[in-house]
Image 1 (cartoon, helix red, strand yellow):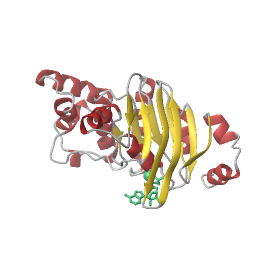
Image 2 (cartoon, rainbow, N blue to C red):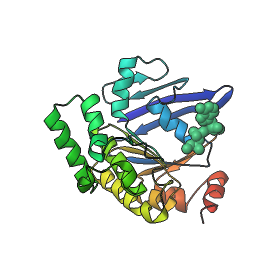
Image 3 (tube, rainbow, N blue to C red):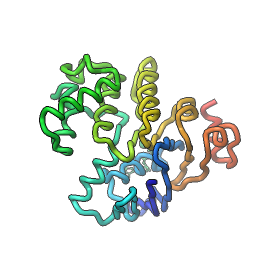
Length: 243
Ligand code: ADP
Ligand code: MG
């Protein structure tokens, strides 16, 4: 079980995350929905210290990280366990697809050279892009680039995969292939935190949905509860914008 406690993040005087607590079971897909500017990205970024929170802890089975007071060494360990997939893919442009996936295995995991390639190819195979191993990102569609980014994130075997609006920068006809890749990763037992505005996808993939507003979890439940029986007026109003 992963336990997040009292996550607080302020930008100047603006409290963006107001003491978030969250438990995640292994294999769960927890989805965040909510209006923009309510702290969803900040939440994900705080968990792998792309943003430094003002307070908060994250506990994996045997390790607790105090996010506001963390050493460089612990930060690296934490990042390995919380790989992130961004809206904008963020692949290394001057490296091939294979090299992009190899990077973390080489630099972070420090695997021997032969194993690096073998593992990276296996990850690319899982997302159906082994044939593109020698291509550069710019020659791939956005959907393919995002699938490479997912392969790269999964190559770290993270305890928690963080996905921040992974399909929102894609052409509509490319959305489904990335959703299918994420679904496969979920079926493979990967534990995930997903931010998405694709309500149909969230409904299908999430084991639990959290509605966040103004830095607080306002309502949570399984997809049926959240989408078919929303309790708070705020969530009802938010969902009505998607109808
Ligand atoms: P969401 O992902 O839900 O759209 P964000 O987490 O990106 O929201 O942003 C939450 C709030 O924090 C917004 O009001 C945003 O303006 C503010 N914010 C995010 N990053 C920074 C930053 N680096 N400096 C100052 N304010 C920020
Ligand atoms: Mg965001």
